[in-house]
Figure 1 (cartoon, rainbow over the protein chains, first blue to last red):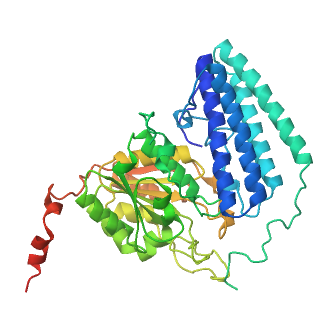
Figure 2: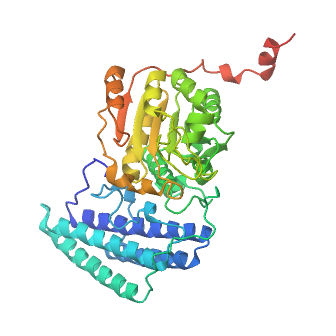
Length: 173
Length: 276
């Protein structure tokens, strides 16, 4: 949404820095959302966001290990085609009564956006080494989409009344 | 701030206090954008003071690691003004909501614009009083109905950017919480522009105004053409539908600042002026 031009990596190292920042921001956001849901006593969703934070943290750490880095690059050093990193959850999509199914749908959306981002980069006018890394990472993100969908099959989809609150915050009756 | 990190990162500006805002609240985007802006400016938390009034959004000082003052309803601007005059070395950011800033603190808003003290005023506008459960605010649309206003307000909406321009604010912009990076860009400009900087932020209230979730589809980034000419800015803002984002006006009026040392005079000097 921001009208600044997105960051375009010109080397494998720049690509890995961007990919690492993307994973780091996604992990940090999931951790924030887990804390938020704990505050609002939605324990199932809090646990699920905490698990997603750990998973994204592993992805970040995998890149750190591959590159021999100790600290993830600051996500704010990069510009994206999306308002934040393509794998970062939009906090505006949350609801205090949301269920694990909703949280997984958000995760699925995030993984799809990340895959789209890397696929676009694999076709962009960038050095061949970057295109190759982007294609490989896009394939990994597509695999994550598949895994999230498998996970979703084991989680019940809530009924249409999931957002109804018998004691709603509007106290104006 | 991390001992190893010479360059600040946004996380350095967040405290350990966990926000109690509703999940989905736009104010999270403002907190993130503020942290990003301060990091980009290479500020340190102890160089910044965040002052607020009362309301959901006014909780924000506690969620930062900067100096903070959670003040009286509608009185964030006089508090921030006094602080900046006494401590011109601090970066002072005043925060609040549309009710706090435009209704209870409406008169302070006018005169803060007029005085042009070097502050940044961020208003998280959700067009409703959220903390007190959904009453219409000054920026609520005329025909918005709820249990508390079943026939709408029947009142014209307050127009914050036009008022700020007319009253003399030196920097006027609009951001959106769904674009924290774009909002951080605007805040960097607001903080670095001398004088009174006013940033109107569209910040959805998902609990009492769930329809505002659609703002992400209706806002237009970078659609305000920044100008230093108040006449052009006035034309632009009166043709605006409230969904255009960016910097509207960046003027060159020097900020008000009393002579250095004036605020350090002993209280007895002040008391002497009131002696009978």
